[in-house]
Amino acid sequence: MDPQEKLLASLNTAISGATLKKLVLSRPSDKSIIRTEGRIYNKEGIVLQLETHKTDGKVLHKNLPASEAAEYVMSLLGDYRQINLLTTGGDLEARLSSKGKLLVSGKVGSGEAVELSHDRVKKVFLRDGEVYPFLIALGVSDEKGRVFDKKRAKFRQIDRFLHYIDDIYPKLPRGELYVLDLCCGKSYLTFAAYWFLTEVKGRTVKMVGADLKQDVISYCSSVAEKIGFDGLSFVCCDIYKFEPERRPDLVLSLHACDIATDIVLTNAARLGAEVILSTPCCQHEINSQLNTRSELGSALAPVLEHSLIRQKLAVALTDALRCKRLEASGYSVDVTELIDPENTPKNLLIRAVRTQMSERRREAARKDFDSLCSAFGISLFGGNGSDMTEPTRIIYNKEEN
Ligand SMILES: C[S@@+](CC[C@H](N)C(=O)[O-])C[C@H]1O[C@@H](n2cnc3c(N)ncnc32)[C@H](O)[C@@H]1O
Image (cartoon, rainbow, N blue to C red; front, side, top):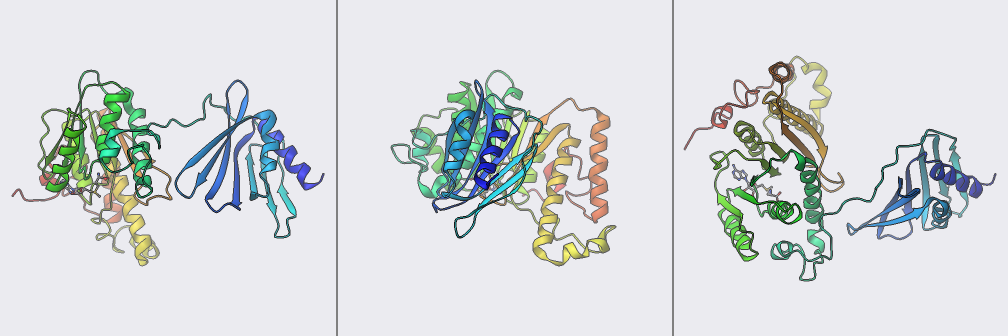
């Protein structure tokens, strides 16, 4: 079988036989394209969805019925110099040589059908080109709703965050929602979350954004007033001292600097927030404590030798300990990536949902926390780091002033 025929037959087998895990078209001739990825889903029969990622941040979708999909992908050869087929029956790579010759390696045999979802088309809450007064007021888009290039990454980030709010939405109680965004900064996320909960979900929401900076708080307050977000207010304060008017239903925090993330998590857990969504920022406490004297010390020497590698270990330990502290407080915790990791290294999202966790599991989390600290010779968060009921003042040995 010649390479063209082999590629076409493999595409047909993988798509019609539903064994395709992923299709990747790379090395595009059009420099405005990064790559195109394809996956199958079920919509009255198998459909191949192609997702083209562009350098300006746009993502274009094209859906093809199985009967047309393989031929269409073949027609893209030339526009892309490489096609990779990942299937449950083996993988195949097709490359165009510099002389334009098609070289095919690997094999796609029969494999198990993948589980087909009924709708692979991604939910999008915020659409570029649609008018949202809050995005216009915040300078993210123009009057026609077109997102400014320099704000595209922020736009994607907050849209993604809304997906995570949508995921945990069933965990939120009925009645008026009380939501906090701690260390809200210029409050793109705060406005987006308020818009989402009130206008998409139709809820009555009281939301407070808190930040140290008076200028951003004044600015955000004036924007909220201007666009009529009546339930949204802003306070200028150190979140370390912030006392909400009642137990929050949802606490959000995006890139709260340094130990501010820990203050957010500690306070949110101490107040018994129903759900906490936090994307941590950098934190240096552990990095400065790592040394070769700890239990793991000598074995760790090659990791600690290079500051960039050492930092990665410190970040991983910090976030793992944050999760354990939340578990010790009765939260069910998971960690995911906020957006495409190409966009920012500070991309981890900690999702914590309050549960009726047994004392035994909480105790186990406390023990895990203590073991990890002692293995690495770390003394974080003061004497009893896993106790989230401690006021932050004690945890950080920070004096009241
Ligand atoms: C990197 S910015 C993130 C802002 C916003 N959440 C975002 O993602 O666009 C961090 C913000 O945390 C605020 N911040 C840091 N420590 C704080 C504290 N102890 N209390 C209140 N705000 C704090 C800073 O003023 C800054 O606006």
